[in-house]
Length: 156
Image (cartoon, rainbow, N blue to C red; front, side):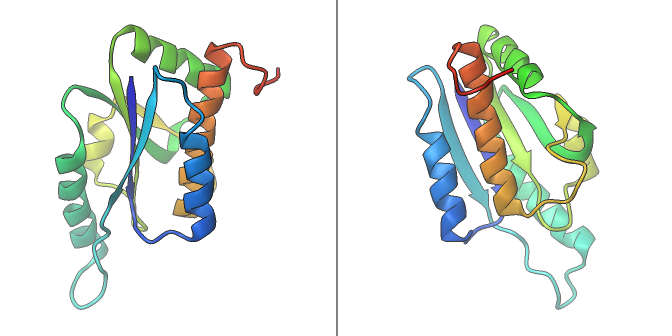
């Protein structure tokens, strides 16, 4: 199974890259976690938030692999536990589905993309820095994987 995180934003601090890299290497051969950074649209100079979101939307659509489950991160999405995420991961693996998690830019995501999502998922009701979201999402995906494999990383 291939899991892709599409994240609007580039040039993250070193600690973000290192922490993400640490989690992405923990999976066995049955799961690959890949990060694809999407160039954010520059704001200002006549580029409104709406125009920026539209440009980022086109870049995101171009990066979504065909026939992949689409999980869009949104503070108004479903608030799953780590165990529920593990159940979702198990369902997707059983169906042979690849999964794409999408993290939007500073101004959010296009409504069309949220409507297209198979799951609208909340990592937190609070607004979080985008780099932190990458790390926390990678950790939660690894935690879900460890739950499915009865690894002692997760404790109930």
